Image (spheres, rainbow, N blue to C red):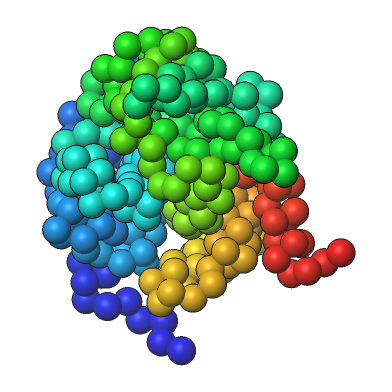
Length: 383
């Protein structure tokens, strides 16, 4: 086994680390306080190619591998989880379905501008009554006279209402299979579609600088050609997309956990009690050591899942494991960071307050911890 990163992977990591330190971290607290989407910064990320890292150059991407993409999300997420999830959701959920299931015409029309960073794209799966039970969606798309007419709604959708959003791909009920099961398909809905509206952004506990909204479709009509992938295969398609998405959310969790450790180590060396830096106290040292150990293991798990994907191996179990573990690591790291900071950790002037608020969603989004355990149990054939 070779754990060394290639020169190309190191270049991506270095680029993202420098960009995060210079363009994101200095503004993250302000964006969070104002719940302000950092439009100019996201556009710069697009210009650098970060919004199209894993896609081929012929579609406007950089042609990097999944390991490079995971490293990039870690570095961006270390500076600000809100910007990290904006990137991750755009690439893994918004753009990836076009690459995996789109026709050549759809790739040229939709994927190319997304990979070039000219637009953002959203993926609409979750509904008020269909969260973990994703197959219970009720949004419908009826095909008549060469057009899909969509009715229903989606919730908790990322990147759906920014000034650079191009549209959303949604799952919708398009009929019934011969055995009576619901037929689910994926439909492309451009932002300007009549009858499609986006509610104002949610007021969130964390990820405040990311764009998250509820979507409504009332007789929203799009051409028949806006079917993405094979009709009736939408459920299988979004399960495949979620497998890859778990790698990016795992990477985001690692980045956030690393930020918790970095801030805690710095504070522990500067904060003095009883005549010495609190970093000299074993109780604090042990917390920092536990954080460092778990972060290293979580990072390795995420990069292994990414490596498996790059080598066309079965990566679903590794992705679910890495997402589950790294999400819990980020929560433990954030909790320890606040504890090490003491009363100051409870104040918004210190970044660990934001980290603590940002970490919880890592155990919910892209499949809750409970769903991850269900997925892993099934993959391990535990009956």
